[in-house]
Amino acid sequence: MSYSEKVIDHYSNPKNVGTLDKSKKNVGTGLVGAPECGDVMRLQIEVDDATGLIRDAKFKTFGCGSAIASSSLATEWLKGKTVDEALSIDNMDIVEELNLPPVKIHCSVLAEDAIKAAINDYRIKNNMEAIKFEGSVVH
Amino acid sequence: MIKFPIYLDHNATTPCDPRVVEAMIPYFTDHFGNAASRNHPFGWQAEEAVDYAREQVAKLIGADPKEIIFTSGATEGDNLAIKGVFDMYASKGNHIITVNTEHKAVLDTCKHIEKLGGEVTYLSVKADGLIDLQELEAAIRPTTILIAIMYANNEVGVIQPVREISRIARKHGVLFFSDATQAVGKVPVDVIQDGLDLAAFTAHKMYGPKGVGALYVRRKNPRVKVTSQMDGGGHERGMRSGTLNVPGIVGFGKACELCRLEMESDNKRISALRDKLENALSQIEESYVNGSREHRLPHVSNISFKYVEGEGLMMGFNKEIAVSSGSACTSASLEPSYVLKALGLGDDLAHSSLRFGLGRFTTEEQIDYTIEQVTKTVNHLREMSPLWEMFKEGMDMDKIEWAHH
Image 1 (cartoon, rainbow over the protein chains, first blue to last red):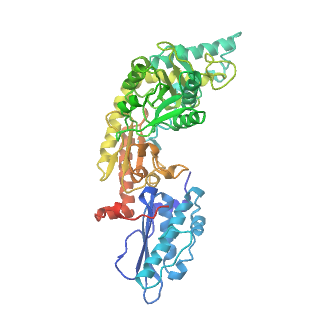
Image 2: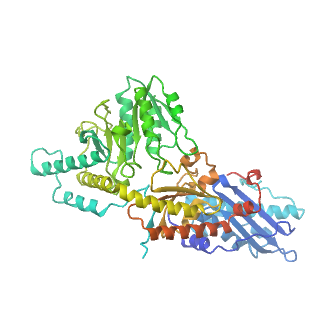
Image 3: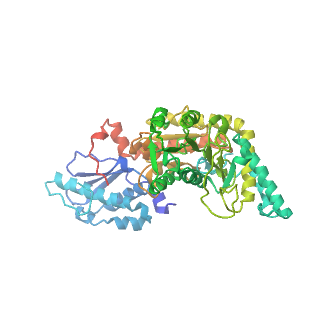
């Protein structure tokens, strides 16, 4: 199986690798996957209190190239969106953008789950109710 | 000058030695006869070439040429040995003992035997990948007809104590079959001293062509017979019908001869390179060598680099360096290597493993470059691994409630 150019590009030059201060109230953190499954993604968003826009997004991922690329792409898409807009990111958009083969679709699902988990973490910290997502592994 | 790409996956397959190819070529064009054609020179020539190759193959493992049955490869050999014994010795019993780190060609054949009403015991291995001989002996029943245990493992290179196994088998009057695919041509295999009754191996793991292999079937003390699994012209003493792959067999013979003559000097050089690679990569923090280092093939090293995932790791250099991984992501299934799990590795370490298989044409420059690239990529990926960050912060990852898919 060969990788698409876009996957290789994100793998070689990942965007937004890093860590945000998870103790801050305007930072939401999502940690999904499990080491036993071969994929763990941590995705973080930092929301601008004044504008409500996602000012920064960072990730760290343990996984294959497609998992790294999916999370790298997700952080790029998150920046500049409102939290509500971020909820509209669908895993199939990631599949399409990165040209992921069927065996790698779970990487995109994990990225979508990570976004949702980060948003819920942010909502809970800011006294909003967590959103219940159907068919998702996010707790 | 380093030769690219660097091939370090010799347990998967080996390149054909140019001397092997040279020996084969006339048998495609000039000497194309069917070895079963008894009435003209074309057939005689082919038969002569096959006879000579049979001697070359037999000599490598200390067998008599009459004990060599040519097959299409080790998978066929494994099937023929296990199913053939099960059929032939049905009146003696229906129980087979094997090990859970065997190749799928053995394990799936045993599963098939179970469907046919046979009984199979799957022994587990110790942390070093070796079987427990007492456990083996205890598993033998009055109905046991076959012990099927590989000579050397394809993923970690661990060599089983075949001589002790054969002694136990002899003592109880049970046949011993060994899938010797990874061992023949790589380490000295001697069917007499090792006490093998049946052994399967293949040309393409020892610098010969793909599509040709052999099953060794002992002819005396005891005389072993297998029921053929393919009906036809009764070739190969009735055990394996089908027109012989003459060019392939000629190449196989030549490959065996080269291994016999060059194994010792090759191994000295290859194991030194393997040790250099392994020692250097072991310097990386949180890296673990998998399987026994003492009882092991000279050209294999299987290492887990904790907190990075194997496929992601290979992607960092796979345009230049070919290795393989025990990670699930490398195959269609999502389960990581069952062999590494049988050694007691957690799924996380199994996902983080790379197998390096060196070979006859591997150079020191290639190994130096590999050390450099693997080290660089492990460090690069750990920089983006949340698990590495948690480890560095001293977090106990076993206490985290992971969201399992």
